[in-house]
Picture 1 (cartoon, rainbow, N blue to C red):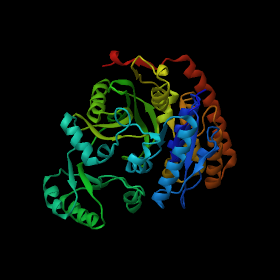
Picture 2 (tube, helix red, strand yellow):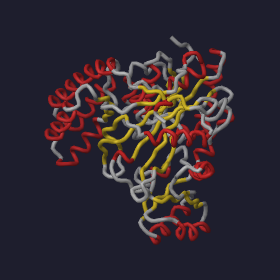
Picture 3 (cartoon, rainbow, N blue to C red):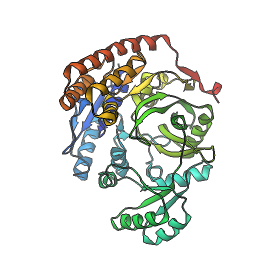
Length: 444
């Protein structure tokens, strides 16, 4: 068992739990750093067997300086105890922004993935304008992206942009104020010049700096693919996998309720080119869309932190968290043969979101549960649930209790989770029989 811990900041419950499980499956110890806020809801991740000895800090969105000082104090203590810097991992964009904002102070005690020897920040890459510049320099196909920093930029942008378009903040802030002010939307769509002009002036007067991008229209769900890649210190890709939505809510452009591991041959070299353009060391999630108008694949954005399917990928033999840890602390453990995932029938499922979607269909709990049961029954032994998983079932049991509290029908939910348990038993057996990896060179 490894002794040096990983510090993980909890700001997204599902992603945080995924990181705990990714580390736990390789016996990598974790120190959870947690904070909360009014209306945060239940933290199901706290039920995980991998959640131990948490350290509480102030919410960075409420007291940024105190949270920073508390984290620095923890870093100093851990450095004295283990004689080395500690890998620190955020579980959302807001915690990533917090860590990067104070990168120069944190780097004394913590490793953050990014560039070369992990001594440079990635603030330019986190800026959507800076990211667009890097991609254009490398010849990567991205949506037309225009900066709007103040009112003088508006007239130029509304004339140059293509419609429909979307706008979003250049960089998220620690408090995620843009989403909170826009009904949790990450981006706002505008259909014409008049709508965009009015909205841009209002946003600028509210203090936002923005980018405006053409909206890429795609056809089927297989035309929106997330590619996950790991680059070593020399920029070589050592691991790559992918995902696309099978079912989403709301439609279109909603959350993936059911997703599957999926990759297309032509995106392997495209993803490698993005990683080279970023000069990235570590893992990243690259979001591609196939433009229905041109037939070309376009890079929509890149997530430079763990994503909501990171344990699903790890469960299917692509553990990006462990790869990063081993490269830093146990170089002999890193896989030497570059690998890429193959497409398969395993599905990642979010039962809570699935229930929300089905209830939106007719509002009837019994019929909604029946449809979910039918779906799982038709994919038995292939479903990887967000919370209810083999060997770490307690978060899922708590999830069931919350669903019963919201919808009632205890007996029906008990039956659903018994079915999920049968699925988990079959899932464990299915994975033992399969080799899901393929050499990277044979796939390009």
